[in-house]
Length: 87
Image 1: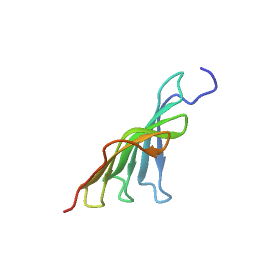
Image 2: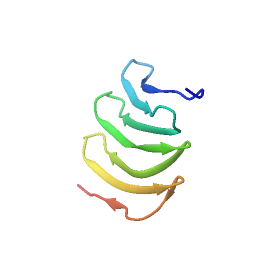
Image 3: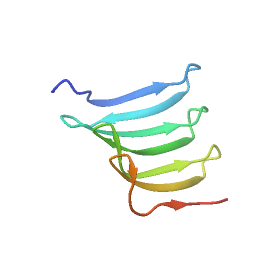
Image 4: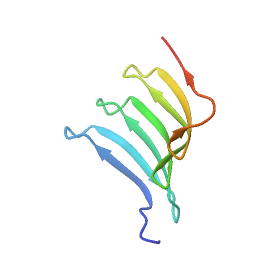
């Protein structure tokens, strides 16, 4: 290990509900994350960071659990196709 975090780490809201599941890929600067709404169960966003910048496909859900967007990123900048959904 090169001083980089490795494995799955859980983060929590002050009330103890799960706020995020973070997976650090061993020996890389790649981090995959799933964030949750305050209920700790409903996904809020899911995507990947490379060198602490958004990279690739990111999905976002509203508090009802309905997907509201898919956005593609390179170096934390929107890049390529983005799709937005309306209920």
